[in-house]
Amino acid sequence: MELLPIAQLVVSILLIILILLQERSSGLSGILGSSEGSIYQTRRGLEKFIFGSTIVLAIAFAALALADLLL
Image 1: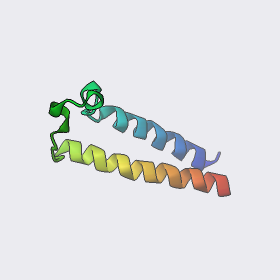
Image 2: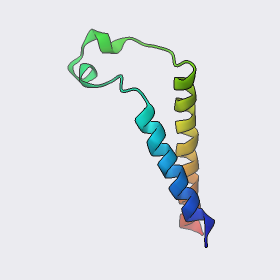
Image 3: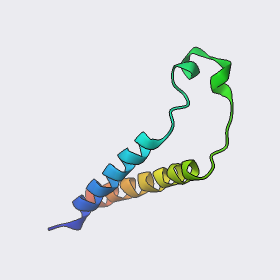
Image 4: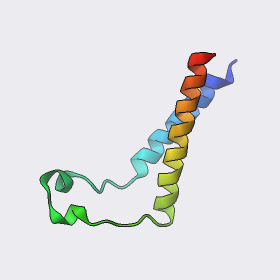
């Protein structure tokens, strides 16, 4: 049994979970141009960890997909 497809599956599920956990700050208010949606906030604590983990998992998923394509 190959490990690459299993790793891709695990990383993709974790990536989906992390994306769904992120706050939706740019909903309809961002589309309609409300001044309330244009407030910049820094990420702190768990939100910063989720954001960083999402980036790392996205890069890992892309690397696994490329490795699967080449191997």
